[in-house]
Amino acid sequence: MKIGFIGLGTMGKGMVQNLLKNNFEVVAYNRTRSKGEDIKSENFSMVDFPKNLVDCDMIFICVSNDNSLQEVLFNEKGLFESLTSKSVLVDSSTTSIDMTQKILDQCNKLGVKFIDAPVTGGRIGAETGNLFFMYGDSNNIFEKYKLVFEAMGNRFKKCGDATYGQRAKLALNVTQSMLLESYLEGVTLAVKNGVPIETIMYIFENSFAQTKMSGTMPKIRDKNFKQNFKLGLMRKDIGLAQREIEKLNLNLPFAKKISEIYDEAINQGYIEKDFTVISRIIERNNNFIIN
Image (cartoon, one colour):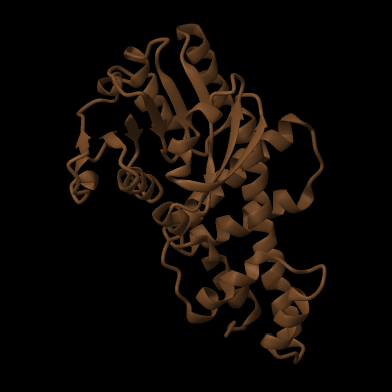
């Protein structure tokens, strides 16, 4: 199969490399073409415009925001200039539900088969082929193309019809942001009150406070904030979740508060760091070093 791929960023490049490892031909587009120059494979090539991917069996998109999706899909020389009823489009970006609905509407108009399939697992998951795809699929397309998804991921969950993968992803990311903050605040309270950090971590991991966020502690203690999932992207996703909270008229006070904490981290210059750098705000505000 020939797979089209738009977006060779932190996630997209790893996804493409795993498709190539699994003997798929990949044709890619990236706004900055140089990002694909270090992908060395006879089965890899690049095109100058998204619309040139039309002859691919299916096309994945993994870009960072609504504006990028608008550009690669709807603008002049965008993908919708050439897609037909033979096309299969998969959006693995994390963007607004409004944008996902807009894409779905245009796909329905053109007869294009569409799945929204955002991923979680960060850069490491993308590079190792261990992504989790949560997908919305109105036409049972996923099963037909499962081998393609299995080249990039190892966990898959249908969330409902098209757009529902995106709905689940926004809930996931705002929850992950709150879990990390909660975990670090509990650690801070215990350690500042004299409890050894290893002791409180053990207690958390053997109680209802157990969370995989404990796995971030080695990075946090070593102050290693190499990007796995960028803080700026997490802040974007929190904002998208807040938009849905307001639409639904929900009273979710912690979800509202978490955006303020991330804004403080951005103001401190951490926007390009891994989202675990949020720990630096807790340290700064409490005269405390997590180590």
